[in-house]
Length: 305
Image 1: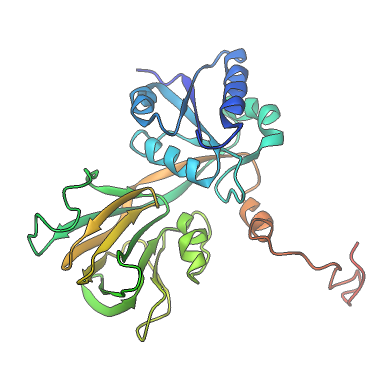
Image 2: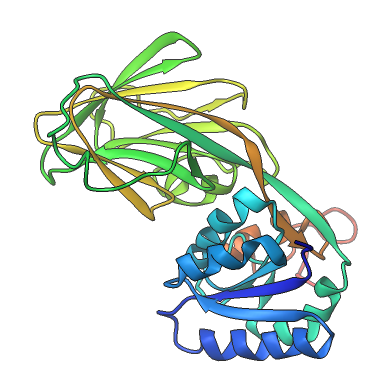
């Protein structure tokens, strides 16, 4: 089936998102592009329409864009993000500019930014089929994550142990709240909050970031994208795994997770210069600019102009 329509996916929990998605859909229709509008709660219906979608427009925040990206991954569909959230690290357009700029993107202009995706496999080494949560959730195979894959504790006041191996070599055992494995996209999410580095958007590197480590390795690792990370969890009080903060699965002690870069990529529609990420980074992190220009025209300290 030819890809000839635009799909608009909005956050059903965001007041005003449906109205904006409907408005943008009408603009697409007026340009001769058939469109459909569904909420993030209508994932099953959206999957049925993906084979004919030439572009997906996400109307919401970064969470909505992540859900849209997970839908688009298997069909290689480019995504345009409209930000109705607070930060919008991955989004392209603001509410105010969405209507006027949408035709530019629908006409095929702009460029495609490809970002790395993580792929994970879960191995139940203990064979505890009736352990905590193993049958509670049907997971995709392989498991894909645009942002991050997290192993964390299930009990609030108990630490867990996560043994980490890097490309077949044992590295360390983390003791604490858990471990984050993040892509470049996820480097501005949970990993950043836990003290991790920020990677440039198209980096293929992988971050391994401990969460609140206690008397164990505390520093994050930045690894080449072709490395394989092995994480084995040990806990008498339960543990859990999360994909992009949206799909969760309980783990039992002895479970092992392997994480690597997927052959798939997520594709974002961009219209701005490729330096857009750095131009808006401090603003999105809410870091105030200096009230003056530290370098005047002659290279000395001077007033901000």
